[in-house]
Length: 335
Image 1 (cartoon, rainbow, N blue to C red):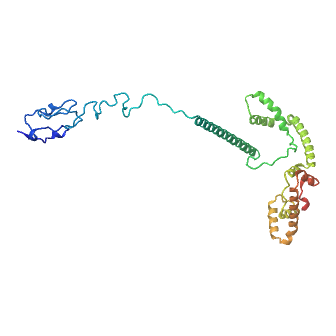
Image 2 (image 1 turned 90 degrees about the vertical axis):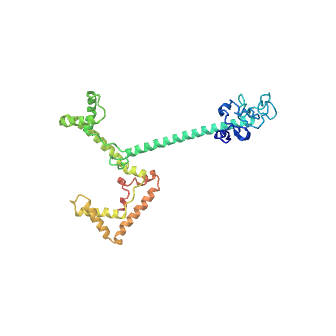
Image 3 (image 1 turned 45 degrees about the horizontal axis):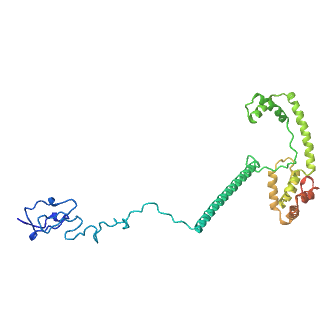
C-alpha cells in the first residue's frame, strides 16, 4: 500500500523523490541506501532521476569543467586571477622618499634633539639654583641659631675691636690640667669630662697650690683694664652702635622719668628697686596737665630732630659729630 509523500525525512535536505502519483512504493528500500559520498541521494527506480553534486539542486544543469560560466579551472592558466584573500609572496617594496623629504625629516629630528638638550640644560640649571638656595637658607639658619641665646632671644652683637675679658686663675690651671688628663685618658674626647675632672681637682687644691695661677690671672686682669680704658676713650661700644645707626631718641615720658628718678632717690635713699618708683612716676605723669608736660615734650622734639639729622649722615660723619659727647650718651644734652 502506498503512503503519501509527506514524511518528515523529506525535510532533511533530501531532494524530491520522483514517483508516479506522488506516492512512495511500500517496497522501496530505506533512504540511507540511496545516499552517496559527494553526491545527492536520488531514487534509482525513476527513469528521470540523475546523480548531481550535493551543492547543486536537482533540475539545474551543471556546466562541464572549463566551459564558459563554470567556476572550475579559473585561475589555473598563466596570468589568471589570483585567489581572493591570499597575500602576495615576498616583502612589499618600500617607496623611496624624495631628497627634499629626507632632508626635511633630518632637519626636524635635529631640531628635536637640540630642543631636548636645551630642556635638559635648563632643568639642570634650575636644580643647581634650587640646591644653591637651599644651602644659603641652611647657612642663614645656622647663623641665626648662633646669634640666639638658649632661650631663643637674639644675642647682642659685639664689637670685634672690643678687648676680650681677662682669663681667671681656673682657666690658666685648666690649660695645664688638660694636657695631663689627655696623657692619662687618651680615649677621652670632648671637653665635658676634662672640665669636670679639672673642677674637682681645683676644689681640692690648697691656696699655696693656686698661687701661681692667681698671679697669672692678676697680670691678665691688669692688661684687660688698660685695653678697656683705651677702647672707651676711643668711643667704645657707643661708637660701634653709632656706626650701625643712631639709637632711638627718648620720648617725653622718659625725659620726665629721668628727672623724677633723681627726686625719688633723694626722698628714698634706702629703696633699691624700680618697681615702686615706676608706679609712682606713672601716676604722677597721668595726673599732670598739658602745661606741665610741655617742657618734656619740647626736649623730646629736639632729641627727635637730632636723631633724624644723625640718621641722614654717613657712619664716619655720625661718629665725628658725636665724638665730643662723653660715654656716647648723645641725648643727655636734651635732658
